[in-house]
Length: 232
Image 1 (cartoon, rainbow, N blue to C red):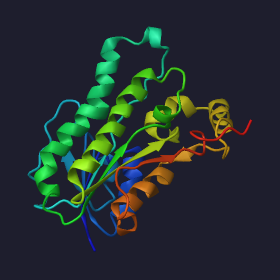
Image 2: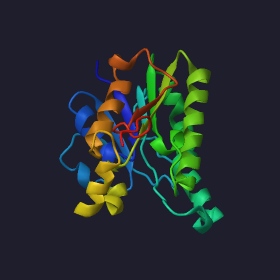
Image 3: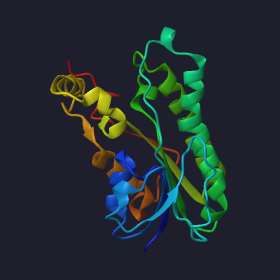
Image 4: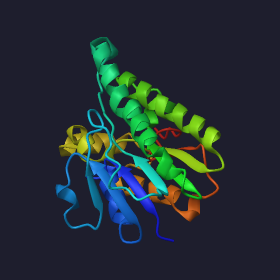
C-alpha cells in the first residue's frame, strides 16, 4: 500500500538514503533547507530549517502515515570545553526541533489508521564514550521521548528510534575525511567497518513498513556491534 511519509532533513545523509529506498513506492515529502540533491527524485519538497522555521504544512496531504526526524549534531569535545550554549544548541536541533515538527503534523498522523514515527539517537547514549556529553545528553532525551510517545499513542502510532554508531554521512565527514581516520574508526567496531547511510536507512524503512508493525517503543542499535561487544 502506498503511504504518505514526511522526512524531516531528507536531503542528505541517512534521510537522503531513505528517500532513495521509499520514493519508488510511496508518496514522499521532504522538509529541508536545500532541495538540490533531490532534483532527480519524485518527492514534494518543503523549505524548512529545524532551528528557525515553523514547518509549512500546506503542502502536506490530509493524512500522513509516516514521520521521520533526521536532523542532528555531532559536537565531540572535552566536557570542560563545552559551553552551556552548546548543550542548548544540541537540544534545539535534536530534541526541540523534533517536538515542534511532530506537533505541527500530529493532526495529519492521527488520520492514519497506523502511523509509524522514527527518530534517531546515537550509540553513545547506551555506551558511555569520552567527549560525547552534549550529543549524548540531547539524544538521550530523544530516547525518552520515543518511549513516552510510544506508550501515550499506542495502539494508534508506532514510535521507534534508531541509535547508530558513526556513519559515512556529510555530518560525520570531518571524522572520516582521510584514510587514517577511516581506518581508525573501522578498527573500533567489531565488524571492522563504518556504517553507510543506507545501512541505517534500511532499518528506518523497515520500521515504516508493514514488516515492523509489531514493534514500538524500541531503541534499535545499528552500530557495527560497538555498543554491546568488545572483541579486543
